Length: 88
Image 1: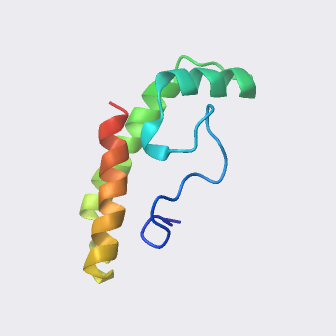
Image 2: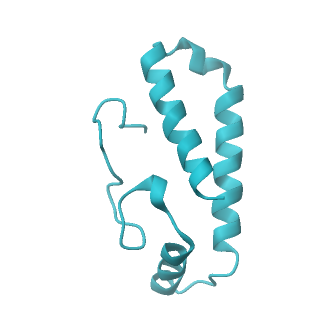
């Protein structure tokens, strides 16, 4: 659920690789996550980038988003597109 439009400056409920900001996920955080979860680290960054790109493309094509109030739609779009741009 996108809480940012309702709670400005909101962060992730759980920390991810020592951080709570979705827009600041780094390869280093992915490595720490993999170490903690005891899973292979090698595919994680690629998966994160692909997921962010697919989410951004899906958001742009989501017709139902037009039913949202403009400010809400814009806020959610900025968050999704910002994350996608930050994980390249």
